[in-house]
Image (tube, rainbow, N blue to C red):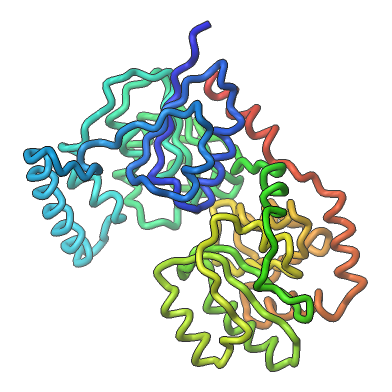
Length: 391
């Protein structure tokens, strides 16, 4: 029987929600039915180690390769990189600037080489460059585009993206809120929109959570954990202010953060200025954050918004008492005061949620009891849905 030829395109496999979801999906696809090719624009991501051996990794387009032996391509790439750099700088001075991904694609589209092979299905697994490349450079019978962000509130120029999404047969949102966000942007694309939540392999998460001992945690203190990229949308500046309130209230705790990002130095300075260096600790990026999730006492998510909130769901799989801010997709994961707490974005509300777990022991016990009843799997239904899309 002929295998269906499937292409996935993603920026990279550095640690992130979409990237972890893709890894889970690829590890659960039938090897006997599908020949899977994977195109990444940047190599070296930590999650590449978890790719199944039946996935063929393609060479990226010439522009993204550092080919020292090809003098002509080096010159061409240099010219287009200079052009891109200039356009990115000019974009900053525009009255309505484009998203940087749009600027880059417009600058390099003429030099982006298409893939010669024709696929049965081609899938852009995130917005931005993967979407533009699949839309305009890939030949396939069917095209799917994934959107994993609150699209309406992004900086993407919607008129430009409209042209790219027009070439897709279906647009997949990772949450109901994301779907609404896309419909509010492109009402005439409503008919080709569907929801497939981020695919979570709970068995793998549970297995990884027992891989090794966490030495940073102490049983003498309350260990609070947050996992996420150190960027403003994750609300870590507020988390630090909450930590200060916890300290002033006399609670014996340490708040650990797994993740890295451009705001690392800024946030560390705030911690130092607040004299919280012994209470709010950045652990950096970890290939396996699940050992920390399993061993923490309270998991906290202070995000302003999330496409889905994958780390929140992972903490729920590991049966952790959760405090999360009321970002748009929170109630798709947490049932307030049943299997977690959804609080307002105010510093005082986040503080009150965490303190409730600390002082109200019967309430925390009830939450843990309810968590034990929760389904651990977001995998099977989502994979069945996905297979229907590509068959």
